[in-house]
Length: 82
Image 1 (spheres, helix red, strand yellow):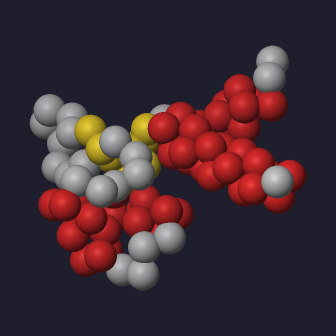
Image 2 (image 1 turned 120 degrees about the vertical axis):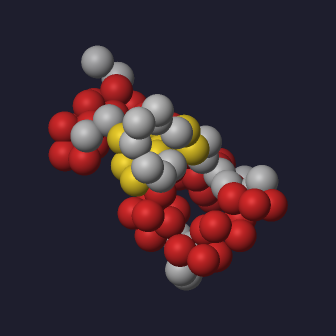
């Protein structure tokens, strides 16, 4: 199992497979939920939201959030090497 898979499995175990958008904004680093909603309306969210029939609100898959965080880490490591 790769390091990425281990992180995904751990986060899914801790958080579940989905995270509500009302909680994701803090993890992504927006200063408020309103700022997150504005980014959504502008189409600039770094992760894809989904809706689920019969449930209110929007959700983000933990794997998508994890992949985005790993990509940020990799970008930062690449910049340090230059």
